[in-house]
Image 1 (cartoon, rainbow, N blue to C red):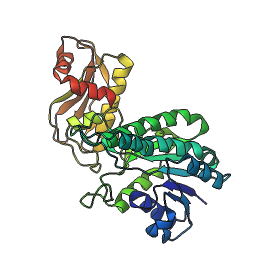
Image 2 (cartoon, rainbow, N blue to C red):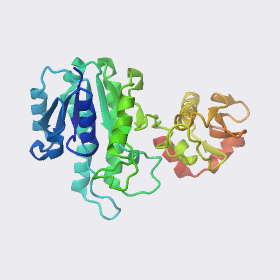
Image 3 (tube, helix red, strand yellow):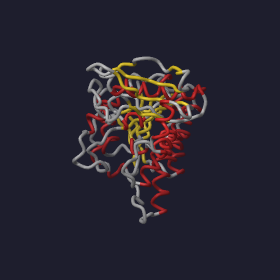
Length: 342
């Protein structure tokens, strides 16, 4: 029997994960802070086993590890999270911010550490972390939400490190943006329902392989490149859109002057092309692979538009006074810095 453990399982996305996996015959270990008050969780039909777990409580993590000793776990979903305090400049609440980091960024690593032996015994050997696009440096154009944004950015980095550190143990680690979902945190006006979000993530989870470890996915299954979310933003693309919808270009070029070596330039260019293809594979097709322009010392990726013609999606290079290198310098320095951090 396939087995999954879900944190934050008493409501919202976590509760929907429990419902859908239980309905398909999985053994579901549902963890939440107070199972006695989890009325909706208690009535879920199937092989659902409730566990008391405050993900910031070391003693409860140890107790869960002891209770599950020797039991294989195929998938761990680190879903527990909080919105956090300290959301506006001038209103910083240090204690609330630190608590948000503990729940959203540190706890997923600690829970993963506590259950690593169970995961190694499982068949899928998969850790799924629920993050948010609000943790993207490149996509932050509205400011605010200091605690939540920083905690999700930290989770993304922690998950990436986990994917490297656990590769030798056969563990796959990914992060998912669940969309803007109708939960207590997302509000009733959000465009995505919990069943839609979870069904999309489950469809992708079922297809994940070791090659996906360290990657970031939208709930629709589309990859969200960590480094080049900026390419999507400059092109006015909403990564939540379904594949096949053509993005609307806002400008002729997204040019970034990096100057960090040929191999890195090519990597960034490849990420840009992947970003365009992942959002709208039918609308954009690579015109040519990343290549060096000997006259301009730039790496470029162009995309062909459905109506004909092409646009340069990315030009990265070290040219100081020529063509695309000069154009790169004309972009705002803030945008270039954001691209390096994405």
